[in-house]
Image (cartoon, rainbow, N blue to C red; front, side, top):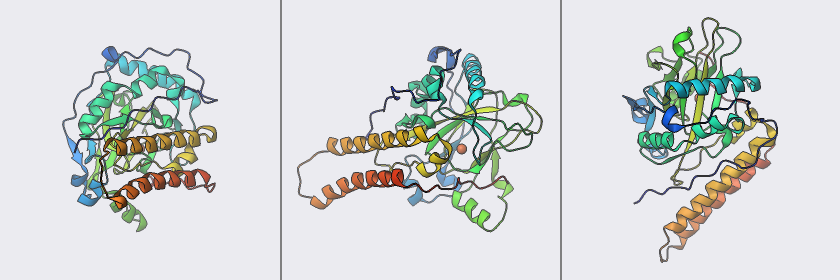
Length: 334
Ligand SMILES: [Fe+2]
């Protein structure tokens, strides 16, 4: 069966309030700013202990890659300049002390990098299925900044609110003490069970990514891999960028934690971005169903396909109507 692929969704033409453009925005030039290399190693979901049934629900069996290069020295310097300008807009939530989301509205450089076809092609190759830059703009170019307090973790143990993302160092990790990116070489169910019993994570399964320099990243299936960003052990600057992707093959059910996003993103943006994303997922799913049109008599099969889209959109609508607030989910600091 040929791979089905959704058409990419354009970045919104409208600009939300409260996201002014930065003053000195470099012009993104893929030829000068990208230096994409290949990771040496991929830890698969199977290596991490996930079952074949769980992996079949995922668009890729990729768990997490070893560190690989995405930006040239010049590209990394431009991104650092942009990230420092955006640091005036940091916000907090119960998981992360200082972060900027929605920077793709404020910097054309950041937006063009996050939407880069060259980078998306690399991500697709590593995932072995077509991947598109995330259709929710706040899932593009998320920036984490070190907390003002030395020792406080940048981000606690958690899984992501999206499926696939890369985490890239914007600052030079070799200029600071600490600030490691770590992942747990086990399943999220294992971590949840340990936490429920009040037990620490197995230190033998905690893996720290190698950090050669700015512009280097790991690619992960973030909703399946438990990971964290450690605090600095001495005063310094640590900035990372997380860019999200969605599978173009809509046979893999949409994964988007709107309940979590609405805690961290501004009220006047988060629901509209989610509604637009789901309208796109619905449209592309219907398009893909119609692309496979054949004459036949399988009424139950036809009904199931329509039910699938109707159910997905009804679920999204119910989430938009639900005014209860969830708590932000994480697995703590240790
Ligand atoms: Fe994360």
